[in-house]
Length: 171
Image (tube, rainbow, N blue to C red; front, side):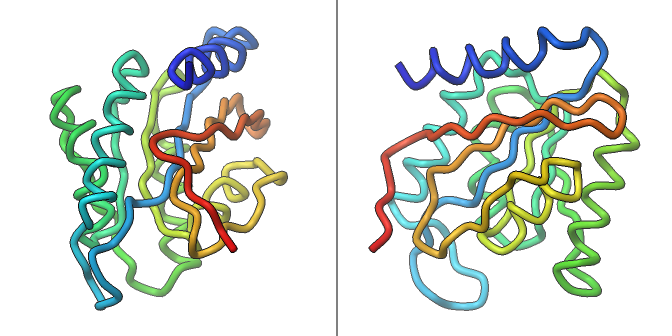
């Protein structure tokens, strides 16, 4: 059912223009601990596999992550499935510079590109906003299942927020 909703969202967004980018933005999966650069927990690994299953028909041509292993590990099953190498965008200069670098990288891609971005709770909404989706809500630390699908056409961005994998609940 979730895959059907995702497919419907992508179809609806891509129906508005034959030449537009599709950008899928998610947060990394659940962490094994609170260290500076943790790996994924079992739940996070399951979420990474769920992401790959969700995106089997999306065909991302570019996958962007932060250099932290939790984002790279979340992207890995999707990258493997689509034979795409993930690209780590540096965190040099802080979150603002990272977000700007990702937005610039996306905007430099061909108009018909499909991009997967795996970020963090503090960067996912900022990236969506930087790409023109002003409606992007802040993301609480406890939320891992949000998937924002944007359709970019020039400076215009239309978006749909869906969920994937096991639902997360925030207190």
